[in-house]
Length: 137
Image (tube, rainbow, N blue to C red):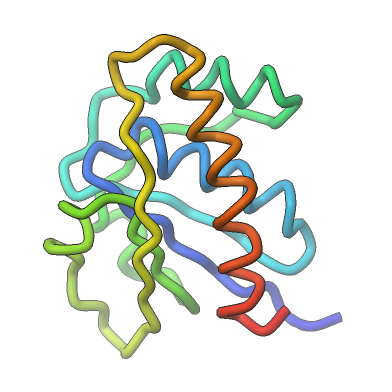
């Protein structure tokens, strides 16, 4: 079996979209991808709506917590995916060249659970196939 590819999902607060993307990619592409997430200005905790939306889909939430980019800078990253425009604009320079792509999603922060579920489903429908194609899985 080939080595896992590492995907870093970046957004601003690392509390909604990037956390859901991390959980979804780790579940849907298990054995092929190790997904991490981080934020340019991380919030103190993962949004309750993001946790609830993931749990409603039967996805694991253990270990999800907001992280700074510095916390993952030393990881071997194969692909960086920004999921918000702000993170795209402030994406850091990594120690080695890393392919980047921008796949934006609506920020459901502060909205009802239905918004988180809609974004969760969009991430699952769009991001999994985009990452699979980008990494040639």
